[in-house]
Image (cartoon, helix red, strand yellow):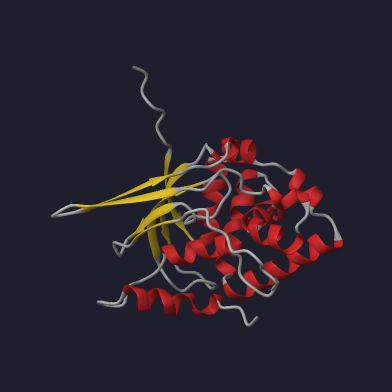
Length: 229
C-alpha cells in the first residue's frame, strides 16, 4: 500500500518580514504553481483598484507588520505583492464588486472541523478541503521576534496554503491555544474601510490569553479590526 505524501516543514525565525521571506523563498515553486496572475489583470479596473487600495490602506494602518510579512513572501517567491494581497481579500472583492473574476475566488466547499471529547483529552480534527491549486501547502514553525512595527514576540506552528499568511487553516501557538478556520464568508459587505477577514487570521494565532478568560483576551486584541461602518 502506497504511503501518503508527507507535508514539508520549515523552522523560521526573525521579524515578520524575515519570516515571510523565508517562507516565500523556501516554498517558491509551490507558491508559483498555485498562483493565477490573471486575477491581477482582471482586477485592473477603477472599481477593482479602489477596493484594493482601500483594504491595503486599512491593513497598513492596523497591522503594518503583516503587510511587511506578506511583502516578504512576495519578495522571496517572486510573486507580485498585489496578487498575494488580492488573494487574501478575495471574498470581500466578490461581495463588493460581484464581477466574474471574484465569483469563484476561493473554490471548493470549505473545510470541516470535528471535536472528539474523551475523558482525559480532546481531539480536534480539521479537513483542509480546498481546490487543487491550493493542495501543496506546508507546515510553518515560526518564532517571530519584535520589531518597530510589532512589539510582540510570537511563536506558533501552523499549516499554510501557498502564498497565504499563517493562520487561515489550523494552528497552535506557544500559549497552548489551538485554532482552525473554515470557509464561511460574510455576505452583503458594503464597507471598504475594513480589514479583510483572512488578513486577521495571523493576529488570532498570536493571541495571548488573559488568565481564566481567553475569549476576553481575543476580543481585546481584535478590537482594532472593528470597522466604523
